[in-house]
Length: 163
Image 1 (tube, rainbow, N blue to C red):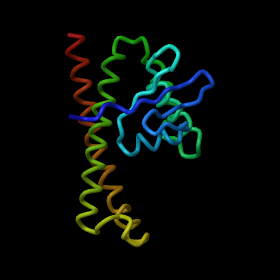
Image 2 (cartoon, helix red, strand yellow; image 1 turned 90 degrees about the vertical axis):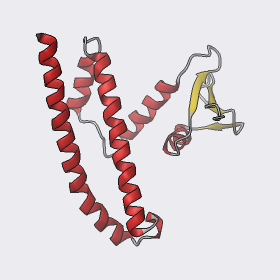
Image 3 (cartoon, one colour; image 1 turned 90 degrees about the horizontal axis):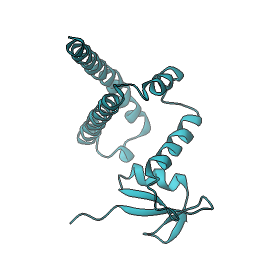
């Protein structure tokens, strides 16, 4: 039987409390849980409202503010314009499927590099950089081909809806 999601309570003083470790935690700690693949749920202690998405969005805002943002202003503008649009639900599903695919590709690349070179921590830094510099163009080509195929499928679906 799988363990239930880790429960994190958010108190009125805006502090986060991890019920598993019985300690207060920060957004950085929550980010670490995400990176480790741990399931968790954040609830407002007073109202019992699920705040998980809001906390995840706060982490994204911090990441976007810190140096190397992932999203351009144009893509954020497009996201905002999609709210309330008839295609909003479809866009969410589309993005979720694409992120799942991207995660699978990333996992396969990590497994492939481990088979070839062993654990990344055991590699010298220069060898790892060389491997990733080789993989990056291949990854970009793969993602570009997938996005083009996805774009064509989306346009076909749009045409069918118009007909």
